[in-house]
Length: 434
Image (cartoon, rainbow, N blue to C red; front, side, top):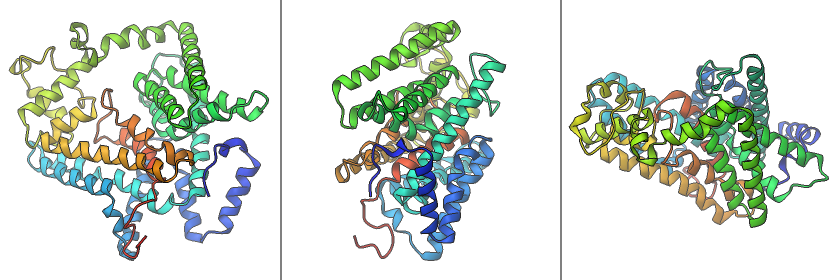
């Protein structure tokens, strides 16, 4: 059984029929697990604590299941091994920090996110039909979020949207949490779009609406993540150059046209964004807070090269820095909650050894998903699964805190969905000899 590119061609009766069929042929426990997993997109629409509780319960339940059944073979996966090695080093760094209890708490509970990913890969999301149903529920959550944000634009227009959280993160829901659906939509539009098909126009509308609403949130990095991953998916899934070119031009013209309607956002996404980009390495960008956050992280990593300052400790240690101590680093430090870049933060908070462990973990996740193309190139999600971790962990971008709650809730949901398509490996349990 494989996910076809026509998965969302029947959005109503066929979907309900499939869900009803699944419920008839699974045990009561599997039914409850599936219902609880499918509720995730709606927990995420409430706030971070309900979403975190949902994810944590799945992770803990999986550990309890593994203990009762004595099935620990999932640890033999390379990406899991490297994750645990990195996690152990994080806790060692925590113990040597200036606030061991706080740092240790931050690093210890972080492991719940990778364990959730394993639970989806080898337990709840192992079945492909379960993943199909979840994809549809992500789509429902995506459209609800679009409706919420459009309502906010009408009632309370501003250049940074916050509903329903009261924080500047709704774009992360659309760009990170809903990434599997958007990647699927982009491939559909390039390979199956038909001018005479109403469903094709509905998918085009949903895709473009989500792009525009993400733009309106004012979250530039999430907007770029959504655009770049959608285009990359189009390139890696049986691409036709002319179709891809038309697709890129269509997105560019649509976005540019909309930005002209909102001149405040036009400046934010063009002049201001270019001026603030840390990777430009010019005098103007060196005076911006984004480079300042990167700089403070780099300096803290250089000053504590072996163990770092400890997970989540850059926010406390930054105020003790003297910018002139490292004269070859231009600009001045900005002390935010974190360095706003995964790789700089890992280096600053866990040292060069933790940095190498972290890179190995990230690379192994990307490679694990990429390798699935070899086994099942004709399955859309197996062939393109690596796009999600590649986009999320792309190094030259501003990010949330690597050990923070909101950012991890969004990214590990999509990472788990991508990893769940990787089933071709040995050692899933103690009796597995395949």
